[in-house]
Amino acid sequence: MMKYTRVLFLVAVATQFFSYSTQTSAHHMQNTRNRRSNGLNKQIELKDCDYGVCQEVNDYPEEKIAKLVEKSDVLKKYLANQKKVDISGRSGTPGKILCSTMTQTYFYRKLNNTRDKEMYIVNLGDYQQGVVLETCVDDSSSCSSGNTLFDAKTKCEQRYSSRVLLALGKDSDQVEFDTFKLPSCCVCLIV
Image (tube, rainbow, N blue to C red):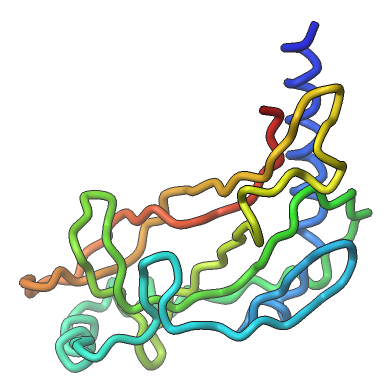
């Protein structure tokens, strides 16, 4: 019976998360983090590097990447089609927020891929690859429903997903697609 209750709870949490996340306006995802906690919106200053990855780096090979992209019509078309998704017109009723989160669009220039190899991400001029991330404000806190739910303890936990981005290796002369593990959402768990 307890296992069935946990499954129902996780389904309810996922439904509430996706219902609320479609309500987030694109305006809040541009250059600031949006902190959602009990219905309050607060702006938080960004740092150049968060989660061990950087938006600005001193050794970014801008000229090399620009030349490699310009040589390839396929890459130019792919990068030109990287449009920002406007979700401000979507509708629905937001559910209860169980974990406080921050949502931000990042334009990283350096990341470690899933094989832990440092890569330069193609993000310059007209060629941008923005990544929308949702992170837990405090991934060690209990869920906002209280410390317990269904007579079980709860906690917020950061989840990650794999993203494919166009990148250049440090010692490479070829731009290629690679996979990166990045924060994707914050979930409420029964522990």
